[in-house]
Length: 374
Image 1 (cartoon, one colour):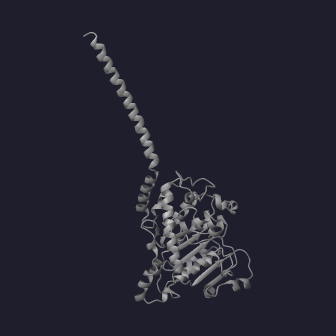
Image 2 (cartoon, helix red, strand yellow):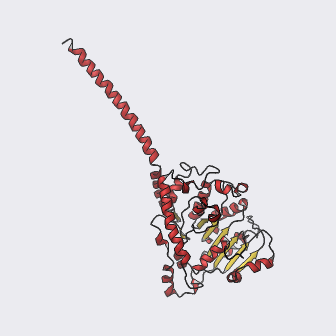
Image 3 (cartoon, one colour):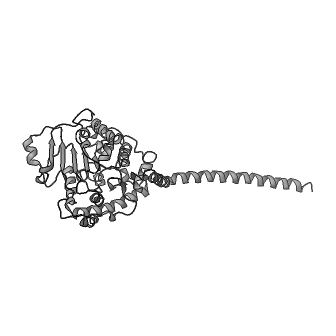
């Protein structure tokens, strides 16, 4: 008996020692598993963030699922808050495979939508001249959003459905061919059926071209602002007023000769620079925008290559009642991103890609159909 006792104690001790080792190993494995789950669940967390944002901002703005994931990871995972980040990385790289695949799936839908929009012909000059009985059917014919699966478009209160906010905040083709993609507007999505239903017979339609430096004379390659106006006209939205502000002095005869004939009745040329001071009549919000009503249809393009004035005017939209007067807003926000930095933005850029995404999100939350411009 005296010899058996030590063996029994030894076995018990060994079992205890192994049990502790197993426990430690299980704890270690649990820690590794938790770290792996935490790392691999980044996009799941973005999905949860999307659901929360959708609930909180649904009255004014519902971002697409892909946009919400990008915004949720903009600083923490994608590092868009770093100066001179590569705005093309999300499009070109597959370092975040799910985001990359979702992005290219959206672009495939966008390509089909853009081709259909290009071929559309409403056959009338002004939708306000259509009798009420015919208008619903006509507006329904403008609905090309069926090319997009549910959840792939963002939605604003006054602009309807719009393209999601995705880097490089212009056509992704720019990332492969700067020359062909730089001024390509086919990344934009417009809910023309929604606009058609909102525009009534008494609605005044207005286009503000703030920074109208490009000329109109080359019909083969019209400037982006004119291409945008032509797109609206293609869907029967004729502008009663076209306010063009340009700081660079241009001979009046040349301006008149370059104005397209169809714009002559509505064209107002102001060969002066705009200002953001509340007391200045060169502030377009004070002198002109304030004269219109919420029931009017107002489109603004802001691109004067002067960030201090531009951002001050944008802040005024965000902090005042002017935002309720603007239906669609196109703005080229100069921030510190790598590829546009090589094309001249280093002189004027301030802020980061994340700042730009946040700025357009805030504008959309105000109900505006805000779009990044070229």
